Length: 492
Ligand code: HEM
Image (cartoon, rainbow, N blue to C red; front, side, top):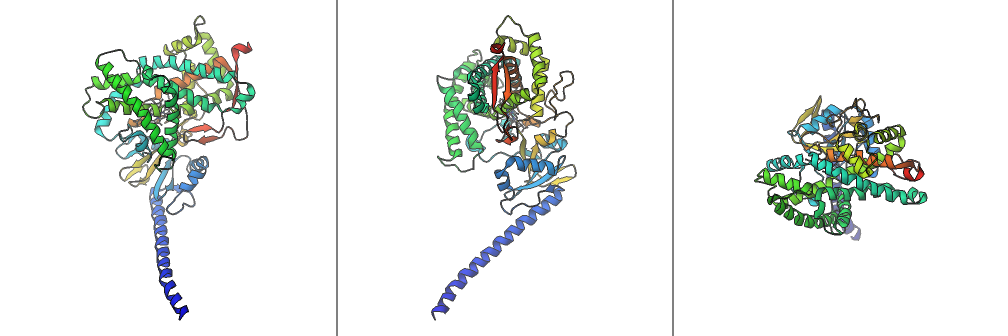
């Protein structure tokens, strides 16, 4: 009797468990079959196995460098397929297709990181399809190309780079060998961009904590999408709100000054001025909108530029023949009667350093800081013979496609024969309507940093096994940036 009642109690539970297990197995099979057919339709090579429901997500998180390298190897000049959770994705290494993804806004739109709206707000430049944001972008972006903006920024950049390099070189060689200069560069770059974008509006001490908070926001981007006060995303959100508070104060002041036709002091002033002059009616007409633009620009100016500057030191040490040519040009052109921090930006702004400019552009193409830009297919569409279904995530690989552009994989600057001086072919700043508006400012910063470094210092790399491997953070860096720098003036 007792045995019979136990059996009666277990049987329904077992049967429910079995049914649930069967449903799960069927759903898993369905997920795999769906992906398989999508992949076949796209004519894309794929990894031998992707997990149901999770796809390749665990493999990407475990070792991103290996994962992306494997995808490049799978289709070195074409399209490979993989799966992020249940969503099909493609990785595009063919430069023609990659460019098509950037250019064709009708069929592909930027795939916004799920943490982005929480960290940067809903009204971000990347949501290009909204007509009012398109107009606003058009009014703002030319400010970042203006000669007077770039020329003033060059003086600030040379001063900031000089101060940082002097501080690093003042450390003992043993201390230098232990300190990854990536952290010095990141901090210097944060202060530099804040000076250029927000100028004298920052009050005492604000630049210091905002520079720290910008790092907290960046960490929020690469964090799991769990928004709690103690998670990296929650902390990033709080940091972004703190920065926004200051930006609101500053943009109120910019509006007041620009309406009074006062002299612009920084990039935010110029952006405010052009929005007022363009008579923007929708988004972009209030100080709050300008404060948002300030956050977009300050944030976007951080990580990729830091990566580019780390690669500069790497290249200058690895290619002494290029460093020597830059030195030779500086020695020939710079006015010796004025201080270097004055003479360098003056000569650079007057276009008197063509080899240096070519070296910076070549550097960015040869070691692109941003490895890929994810988009999403808005409709069923095609890339050559490949049929791409609506909803597929399409990663335009900058690293993969540059390997297929003749000359982009070499560091051989030549001002008379530049591969792609305006960044139209090699996609290190993206392409199409979203193409990076900070590219001129960024490439100038790279050039001026290179010149300050090779003019003032001899650099030796501390070589460690694997130290030069490329890692994804998520912009690209050498695994370590450990150097000993010696002042050339002191050695002379
Ligand atoms: C070496 C440094 C930099 C690199 C390699 C870089 C690269 C990129 C790339 C690849 C994109 C995506 C473009 C696309 O989707 O077509 C982008 C977008 C953007 N970048 Fe940069 N960037 C750098 C520095 C900067 C700086 C200094 C600023 C600040 C002014 C900036 C501001 C932006 C903004 C606001 C966007 C979004 C544009 C939009 O979606 O309309 N970037 N950048």
